[in-house]
Length: 277
Image (cartoon, rainbow, N blue to C red; front, side, top):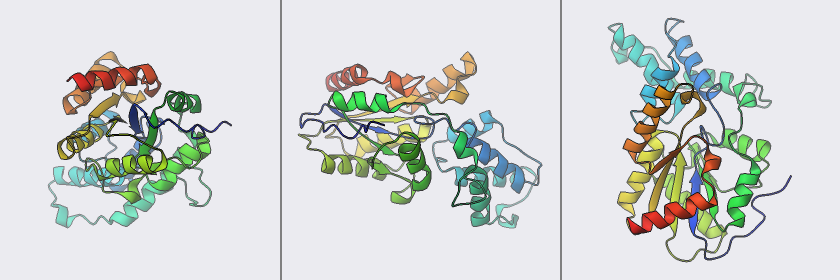
């Protein structure tokens, strides 16, 4: 397999593109989201299983990027709706995480057999090679665990030591610390001249809030948010349109149905348009 990191971009690279992973690089509708629903169902004693739309509604609040925390929150909200106080609910977070992971990774942490093994890929290595050949730098910033992110990037896509900031490496989104650290790692690996534009590609409100916060903290650099519609919201036109509007309201300059639509030409256009804004 070819290695997209093998070609060294030139020092006059036009942009840095940082990708989220879940919903952008891989479809997690039948994995992370399924594990989340399983977890909520289990810890409510089988009384409540959140629908895909209910999970989207939670994510639209912009602060539940971590699916373990999202699972816990939905369990709490279920029992609150039954008239219980959170302080009365016997819910151990570590036990919840362990259950979630047993569904997502599988029961054996050394030999993964869970939902992660069936995640469809949303981009192919050739797409990243094309960006590199066009002089565009790229890396990944994800709320997924490092093990999960590395599994898809290295084992599934065949990338060799890509720049990656994962859950363990930075505060959760929408805190932009991890995004900024990703850019710094890319700049250390490749020669970069000037404060070139940064595009962050994500599928959630939290992703767009992340780049908006980065824009406020570091106005000397051009920041561009690109939204991607995850596969599960593309089942109906109404849901697709509603989700697109949510991403745009959160800061996305443009929204695509698949990440590979963000090709080198599109990136150049976004950079040029942002410089005129």
